[in-house]
Length: 159
Image (cartoon, rainbow, N blue to C red; front, top):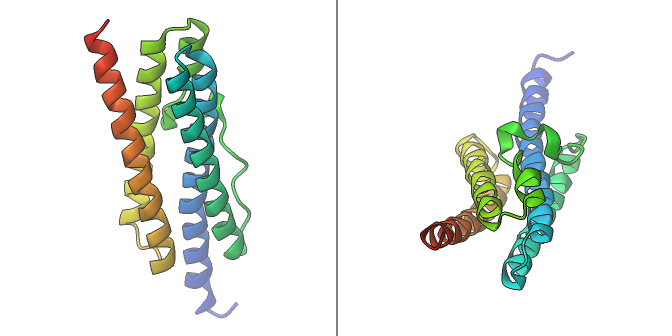
């Protein structure tokens, strides 16, 4: 193998790994928000969580296209039950108990971890086009995080 190819291959693998981590993060958020939407009675919250779920699905699809463009295999979605490090583990328990405050808190925790994952990715050395994509998605994820955090604060004041 030509030594000049090795760093390029390693670099593509590292880039695909970074993007696939974001794919899994988005798929977990997509699933988590779907579960959350089914667990709340407030139609406004249901709509908000469904819209965030759809957004995360769209983000994951964009990232998967970029992984494929690199000639790599996209991650196999998120794994909600194995998402301990991605923040969505307790959502099912909160939904089962129909505890709206706990559901909002779990969404906020998941969003906090998503923001961190995106910040780590955006601080890595991404090519300009991918950096712009990650940055654009990060802005939207921060907006969602802020909205969910605000809901959590309002809910905790009224509990």
